[in-house]
Amino acid sequence: MSIPCYPEFTLLGLEHKELLHPRLSLTYDGVSEFTFSGLYLFRNRYKYRISRNSRNNGSQESSFIISGTQPAAGEAQGKTFFMTPCAAPEWETLEALFAAHDYWKNITESVLNPVRENIEQRGVVIEEDRNNFDYLYNRADLAELAGKKFHKKKNHVNNFLSAYPNHEQKTMNAALIPAAIEVLDHWRQDSIKRNGDEGDYKASREALELFDTLALKGSVFFIDGKPAAFCLGESIARGRMFVTHFEKAVDEYRGIYQYVNQAFAASLPGFFTLINREQDLGNEGMRQAKMTYRPCGFVQKYIAKLQGK
Image (tube, rainbow, N blue to C red):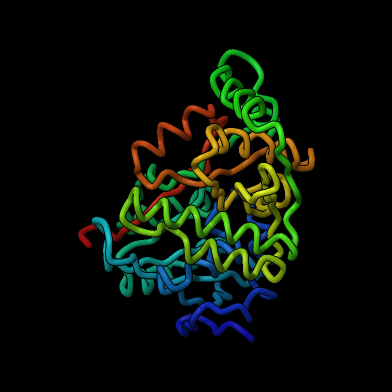
């Protein structure tokens, strides 16, 4: 199905994969949200709608505009936003988008830099969105856990290997989806007990059910023949980066998350030099946990608003 030209929008659907996936795969920065699966799996949470923009700044190629609404939780609940994964639109379109939305979200440096001076002169206020920075890690660092800085992580992995010698990692395929769903259902119960909600269970479940359709990659981990963990992600940033979208485990196995992180990184092809483990969403505990793995950098993201709005 075709995507209408701006200012018309349509609800994001599975039928748009053939149009969106190739174009998003070519985006340079490696934003975790800017993959087809990253958008599609959260389409209901953010009420995503999509439009095609053929009027880009100096570009002969169509790009996309995604319109969304923040869910009813947190400070930004109900706020409307738009995103431009491929390129910034011309000022006339941008001005209309600001009039119809509260802010512009997930702006990357490659999209922002060519237009920043011009739009700031027109009253657009740009700010770093630190809570949504994606964490980047050298794949070799996560796979090898070498040196003093990873000493504690390495100990966790070694302790896991000692405690659970009968462990196995299998490449995700259609036959292993039921095993991964068994892990996910167990994780959901733990999440409800611990946090009072099921987190991203629905998106994770749909990702597993549409594993082949969305062309995702991953692994399922077993202990004593029982499903114990899985991870799921995909290639981004023109194939130089792998983004881990979902990583779930049965908590009763001590050290399993450290083991899964290390084992999956080691199993990835060497042409993936970087692993993107997404953002911390301003959660202090999550931020500390991500920092202990010593990120080599971040995918910086910005938000923008019209002055006075």
